[in-house]
Length: 233
Image 1: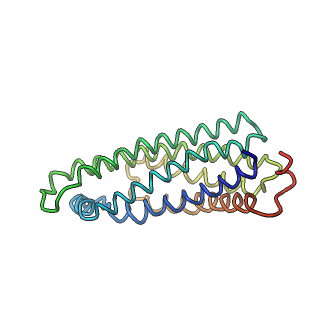
Image 2: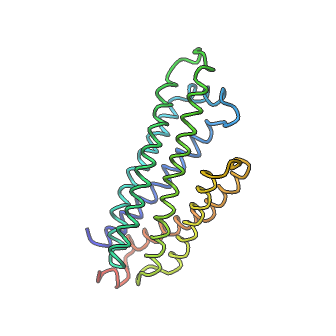
Image 3: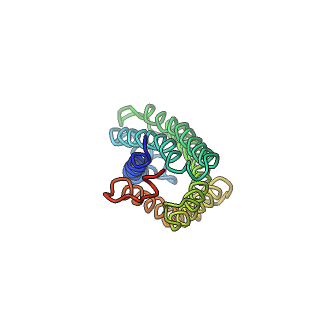
């Protein structure tokens, strides 16, 4: 793999992570789960079971693209510092493993809610809500590790001689968004009271930083006039 191919694959994989992740989380999961209404949550999982399955498949695809980025981003940044790049990739891999573990709880919910609507719903409520809580907690731990990955990636891009330094700043801001939000989710007993604010922090810092980096990867990977520095690496 040459660097330009690594840029292309990284940009394409990152773009697909945005698409699959937003669909699975916001179009499927967020519309199904009502934290203060376990009965409606369980009924949603039962009534819209096919959509839940589609959301899980989208999460699986997102996970696969994330694993691809573990290797391609290492190739993109290794010329700056092979050791730091390996550490950054290691944290992204740990994040992927964590999300894979969390996803197993969502798959379990999918399996136990595959029954007719006439089934006694209340008997499932405690189990489903407990599994959802475990899913959220493990995913939060994974995203905390992802925030560390972004901090290293931001440093590497800042030190690079072919990536705009603005990308480094944006990725470091994204890292701060994930680290603050996930730490609060794991440690604050009243996190739900401030959940919207923390989610906004991730949206503003995280999405903007990663999306800007994705666009840069695609432009440099598919552009007709790549930087001379890139060609020489």
